[in-house]
Structures are given as structure tokens and as C-alpha cells.
Image 1 (cartoon, rainbow, N blue to C red):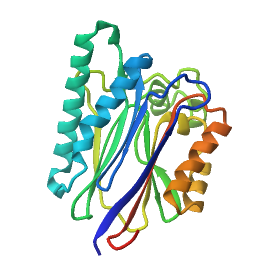
Image 2: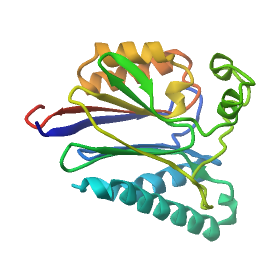
Image 3: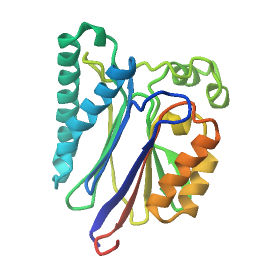
Length: 244
């Protein structure tokens, strides 16, 4: 059985921020979320550069070329951000997270690239798993056993990222996985994951089979929780080739 990816993306400014520094891509082969940082104009630009750099990957890619394709696109994004800062020194410090999922043309493999604190979750057989690891100060503390994951969720420095695309050398995380029919992926900025609990995310992903309705419900929940940040989500389903 040949598998395909079907996806929907949505983004909302939230209730506090004056603009939206997030950017998303939801296509048949590639899905991605970027969360810009470093001031309004610069954050917008950084996330847009990241998504514009990976968007050309939304084509049929052979299994053995997935990681290399993502590495190349992220290298391009980093170079473009570096150039943007060189053109305008006031952009110094701008950057963006990036979480991207690239589906192989055969449907038998997918690759994930991640840097920053946007997240990728996989719902498989009704169980939700966070696949990415946050590049944050508090995650470092959790890894070292200094604080618990529960304490991290309300830590005053939870927004401090330890890695992002800012034009310098970085070490994104890459992974490959075998997709299953029925898998549902959620990619999101921290405007969702910081205010909506994982068990609630799982409940919505299970309860709303329609991707558009599911994405809308997730954003609505983040807004109901105060919407303190920009909120971006991509809901992507692994389906048989002949499915809608």
C-alpha cells in the first residue's frame, strides 16, 4: 500500500502580540513550522526566510536523499539570514526555530529536521508522543535532573532557546522514521505547546478527524488559554494513496 501525506496549516497572531512572527508550510511532501525571534520586523523576516528556504523541497524526493535535502535547505536558510543581518545591522540577533517533516516519494520513509523550541508530535494508535526535543535552557535543566518536566512548563526562563537559525553554525537534529497508515502529525510553535497540555492535544487530535477543524480547534484552545504568543499549527495525516 502506497502512503501519502495530507496536511493543513494555520496560524494566528494570538491575543497579546502586535503581529505574527510565525510562518508555516503545509504541502503534499513537506510540512514545516518556523517561529521568528529578535524583534517584530526581524522575526518576521527570519521565519519567512526559513520557510522560503525549505519550501522548494515540497517535491518527490527519493528516500536516500531526504536528510541531505533538509540539510541543504537549512544551510541555505542560515546563509540567507546571515546575509540579511549583514545588509542591516539592526537585524543583529534575529533568528527562527524550524521544525520540518519531509515525506519520501515512495511513502515508505520520512525525515524530520528540528532546531529551537517548536515541536513535532506523532499520534499513533491513539497515543501522542513528542518526537522533537526542545533546544531550550529549561530542557537542559530537565536533562540534568535539576528540575522536572512539570516544573519546566512554568519556569520563568522557559522561552530561552539554546539553538536557533541565526546565521551562525548550528547543529539541527535529524531523524528518519517509517510512517504508518493512520499516523497523525502535529507540528506547532510554542504558542500552542506552552499553553495547551499534551493530554488535551491528544484528545483534540483524536476527536477531530477533519484536519482543518482540528487545526482550528487547537488554535481556539490556545486563544482560550490567553493566547500570549503567536500560534501556528500543521496537522498532517499519513493516508493510503487513494484517500482524501
